[in-house]
Amino acid sequence: MFDDFIACAEYLIGKKYTSPSHLAIEGGSNGGLLMGAALTQRPDLFRAVVSHVGIYDMLRVELFPNGAFNVTEFGTVKDPEQFRALYAYSPYHHVVDGVKYPAVLMLTGDNDGRVDPANSRKMTARLQAATGSPYPVLLRTSSASGHGFGSSLDEVIAQGTDVFAFLSDQLGVRPETKAKN
Image 1: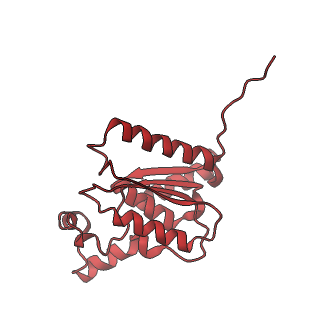
Image 2: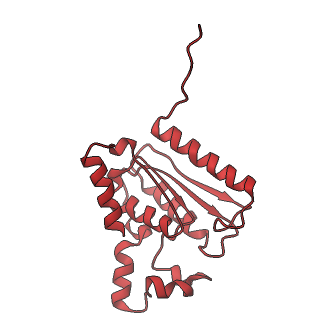
Image 3: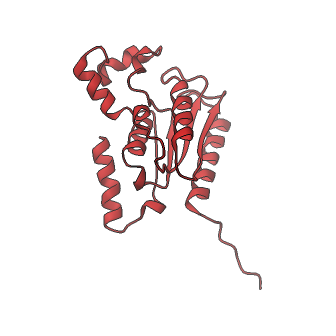
């Protein structure tokens, strides 16, 4: 999955449909894990990353309250072969000091029963400490949301507004102004 996603970005850039300075990616839940992996494996491909409620520390995921349910999908650190596979793509464990990471916005909810908000908090802190770029690494935490479902319409709108504002700012999108006659 990660290799395919990165290959798609490389294809779009290679065919000149876009460039790394104009490419933003966004995903949530397992897509948040994908954003973390893409961000740490190929930070040079993206200008901005938005990641909602992702799992970023694959070596500790099974210790969280909902983590036992993820073992059938991801594997367990208790098996040496599965440990190596989990470590190979665990975003948190592949953040490197001094790397020029793109702008990052991570979103989490205090009431997320599926992915512990500590994942986003920990990953954000690590990226903030490590990045060698001038771009922001931000965390948006909401006390009024969880894993997406069950959030009020007001919260969904507020999150969407913040995501669009972040992406517009980072990609240099400016409103069109009409000339006065």
